[in-house]
Image 1 (tube, helix red, strand yellow):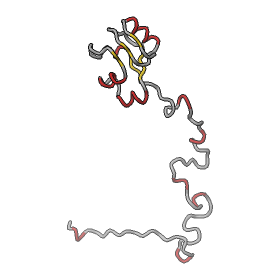
Image 2 (tube, rainbow, N blue to C red):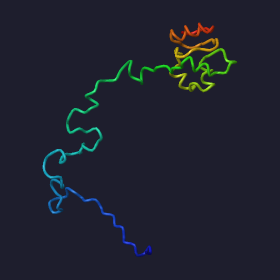
Image 3 (tube, rainbow, N blue to C red):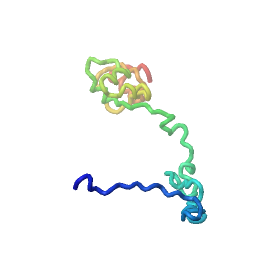
Length: 150
């Protein structure tokens, strides 16, 4: 098929409504009579429209305070058994050390903080300069280490 034999593409112009009775689309402009669809702005097209019912986002309570992740940021959890993976030359543990060896991401650690929990056992003594749980602090002391922040 050649390009010059293709059918012409004709764009149809939009119908001009509300231009008098002679146009065939006068008075109600093809919307029928009364009802929501005959009114001014047709708000039924937006995503949260529920037919006049109280919308879902207005029925739910406000999300405030402790359980709201936008407000309350929980620390990143690191267990004791993960600290055993660090090289044997490392004895001081802080945010920078954990970020350097890829245990936590540096930016996340600075914004959320890190907490050491007592899952697993520590195989060598370490000085830990991070918040810890009670069980973690006991296990660190048992292995001969020391907790500076708790």
